[in-house]
Image 1 (tube, rainbow, N blue to C red):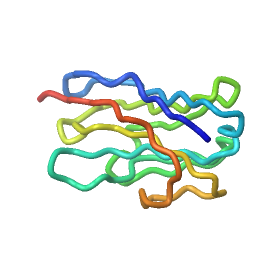
Image 2 (cartoon, one colour):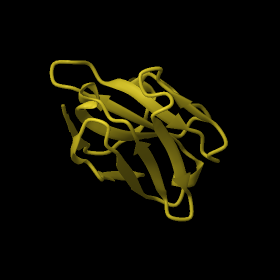
Image 3 (cartoon, one colour):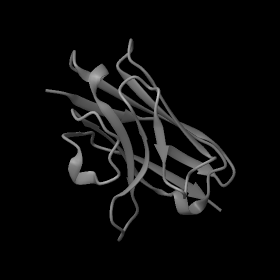
Length: 124
Protein backbone atom coordinates (compact mmCIF):
# COMPACT_ATOMS: atom_id res chain seq x y z
CA UNK A 1 0.00 0.00 0.00
CA UNK A 2 1.21 3.49 -0.89
CA UNK A 3 -0.07 6.77 0.52
CA UNK A 4 0.65 10.02 -1.28
CA UNK A 5 0.58 13.53 0.16
CA UNK A 6 0.97 16.60 -2.02
CA UNK A 7 2.20 19.98 -0.79
CA UNK A 8 3.55 23.24 -2.15
CA UNK A 9 0.47 24.69 -3.76
CA UNK A 10 -0.58 28.29 -3.31
CA UNK A 11 -1.35 31.60 -4.93
CA UNK A 12 1.17 33.05 -7.36
CA UNK A 13 1.17 35.79 -9.97
CA UNK A 14 1.43 34.97 -13.65
CA UNK A 15 5.03 34.38 -14.61
CA UNK A 16 5.90 33.11 -11.16
CA UNK A 17 7.04 29.70 -9.98
CA UNK A 18 5.98 27.02 -7.54
CA UNK A 19 7.41 23.64 -6.62
CA UNK A 20 5.01 20.90 -5.69
CA UNK A 21 6.06 17.87 -3.67
CA UNK A 22 4.51 14.43 -3.52
CA UNK A 23 5.67 12.56 -0.44
CA UNK A 24 4.98 8.84 -0.33
CA UNK A 25 4.87 6.18 2.30
CA UNK A 26 5.62 2.57 1.45
CA UNK A 27 8.86 0.73 0.83
CA UNK A 28 8.06 -0.04 -2.80
CA UNK A 29 7.34 3.54 -3.91
CA UNK A 30 10.73 3.82 -5.56
CA UNK A 31 9.64 1.16 -8.04
CA UNK A 32 6.48 3.00 -9.11
CA UNK A 33 6.03 5.39 -12.00
CA UNK A 34 4.43 8.66 -10.92
CA UNK A 35 2.26 11.13 -12.71
CA UNK A 36 1.11 14.65 -11.91
CA UNK A 37 -2.44 15.47 -12.97
CA UNK A 38 -4.49 18.59 -12.62
CA UNK A 39 -8.17 19.40 -12.57
CA UNK A 40 -9.64 22.84 -13.07
CA UNK A 41 -13.25 23.63 -12.04
CA UNK A 42 -15.69 22.18 -14.51
CA UNK A 43 -13.02 20.35 -16.44
CA UNK A 44 -11.80 16.80 -16.59
CA UNK A 45 -8.66 15.69 -14.81
CA UNK A 46 -5.75 15.97 -17.21
CA UNK A 47 -2.23 14.63 -17.31
CA UNK A 48 0.56 17.16 -16.82
CA UNK A 49 3.81 15.22 -16.33
CA UNK A 50 5.09 11.74 -15.55
CA UNK A 51 8.32 10.12 -14.46
CA UNK A 52 9.56 6.56 -14.61
CA UNK A 53 10.55 4.77 -11.43
CA UNK A 54 14.28 5.37 -11.97
CA UNK A 55 13.75 8.96 -13.00
CA UNK A 56 15.50 8.29 -16.29
CA UNK A 57 12.37 8.87 -18.37
CA UNK A 58 9.93 11.73 -18.20
CA UNK A 59 6.95 12.80 -20.27
CA UNK A 60 5.04 16.06 -20.43
CA UNK A 61 1.78 17.32 -21.78
CA UNK A 62 2.25 19.85 -24.56
CA UNK A 63 0.58 22.49 -22.43
CA UNK A 64 3.36 22.39 -19.81
CA UNK A 65 6.37 21.30 -21.83
CA UNK A 66 9.29 23.67 -21.40
CA UNK A 67 7.77 25.23 -18.27
CA UNK A 68 7.33 22.31 -15.86
CA UNK A 69 9.97 19.83 -14.73
CA UNK A 70 9.24 16.58 -12.93
CA UNK A 71 11.90 14.88 -10.83
CA UNK A 72 12.18 12.40 -8.01
CA UNK A 73 14.36 11.56 -5.05
CA UNK A 74 13.80 7.90 -4.25
CA UNK A 75 15.92 8.13 -1.11
CA UNK A 76 13.33 10.59 0.20
CA UNK A 77 10.32 8.86 -1.38
CA UNK A 78 9.39 12.17 -2.97
CA UNK A 79 8.48 13.35 -6.45
CA UNK A 80 8.61 17.02 -7.36
CA UNK A 81 6.97 19.21 -9.96
CA UNK A 82 8.82 22.46 -10.60
CA UNK A 83 6.46 24.88 -12.32
CA UNK A 84 7.88 27.99 -13.95
CA UNK A 85 6.36 30.73 -16.10
CA UNK A 86 2.97 29.98 -14.62
CA UNK A 87 -0.13 31.12 -16.47
CA UNK A 88 -3.68 31.72 -15.23
CA UNK A 89 -4.76 28.65 -17.19
CA UNK A 90 -2.50 26.53 -14.95
CA UNK A 91 -4.92 27.18 -12.10
CA UNK A 92 -6.19 23.82 -10.86
CA UNK A 93 -6.00 21.25 -8.12
CA UNK A 94 -2.84 19.24 -8.72
CA UNK A 95 -2.70 15.56 -7.85
CA UNK A 96 0.10 13.07 -7.85
CA UNK A 97 -0.59 9.45 -8.66
CA UNK A 98 1.46 6.26 -8.68
CA UNK A 99 1.25 3.11 -10.73
CA UNK A 100 2.88 -0.27 -10.14
CA UNK A 101 3.22 -0.74 -13.89
CA UNK A 102 6.49 -0.06 -15.65
CA UNK A 103 5.02 2.74 -17.72
CA UNK A 104 4.11 6.41 -17.70
CA UNK A 105 0.40 6.64 -18.41
CA UNK A 106 -1.45 9.76 -19.46
CA UNK A 107 -4.84 8.22 -18.61
CA UNK A 108 -5.81 8.79 -15.00
CA UNK A 109 -7.60 5.46 -14.65
CA UNK A 110 -4.30 3.61 -15.09
CA UNK A 111 -2.98 4.77 -11.73
CA UNK A 112 -3.35 2.77 -8.54
CA UNK A 113 -2.80 5.39 -5.84
CA UNK A 114 -3.73 9.07 -5.53
CA UNK A 115 -3.01 11.93 -3.20
CA UNK A 116 -5.62 14.36 -1.93
CA UNK A 117 -4.48 17.22 -4.16
CA UNK A 118 -3.05 20.69 -3.65
CA UNK A 119 -4.55 23.91 -5.00
CA UNK A 120 -2.55 26.07 -7.38
CA UNK A 121 -3.97 29.47 -8.25
CA UNK A 122 -2.29 31.77 -10.76
CA UNK A 123 -3.50 35.35 -10.86
CA UNK A 124 -3.24 37.54 -13.93
